[in-house]
Length: 152
Length: 103
Image 1 (tube, each protein chain N blue to C red):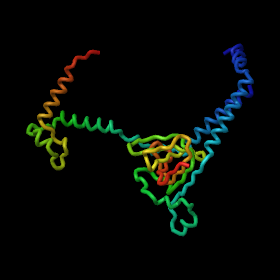
Image 2: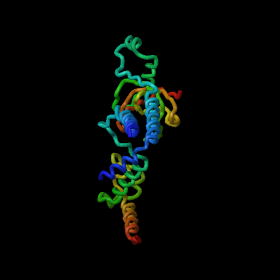
Image 3: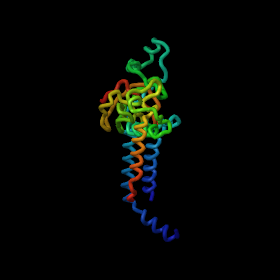
Image 4: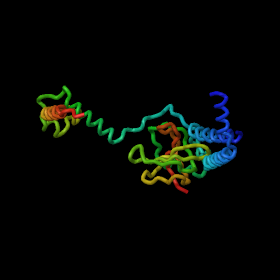
């Protein structure tokens, strides 16, 4: 590209009002992203407490749900338990017939949640709370097998 | 031009934020392929059945009654297909092969 071409490109891009507007729009987009991604919380209990006294002293009130179900054995378990509170990004039935999963954004994390009731999935944007053991999902993301699941 | 750079910077920041959130907890070292669907399982089952029917282990003494009435111990339903079924499959495959190619 010669000097004339560079000048032409520069002239075409020299639209201060247009870039003002686009900069404002992208600033809004970034703020919206940060706002959405920062919502919710992800609490992880890495290991099962050694003693009952230790459990009573250190664990949160939702800890009783940790033993309310049977963890699946065909997946790599990452932590003893986790509680996630966040917004639903997407939901799907499958991959097998009696499974349903939702992808949740929470505290700058994306976590999959395997629902205890596969017949109903929450809508996109719904705020949910899920409690269960944390596994590595097929696709590499982290997945909570929800023993307790509620839409708030 | 300054606002153009600001726009590009904001866009790049947004993309980086989304990419970082998507990738930060991801670990694909233990990736598993998706499970087989009912359709795929049925297709594998049908292929195995046809392979057994057309295979070399079709014993001439095997009849439809003693092969398909009940599986023999430790053999399963498709262990030794009948001669009649074998012949029926052969004739079917011959017919399908004799269909002229119209393309």
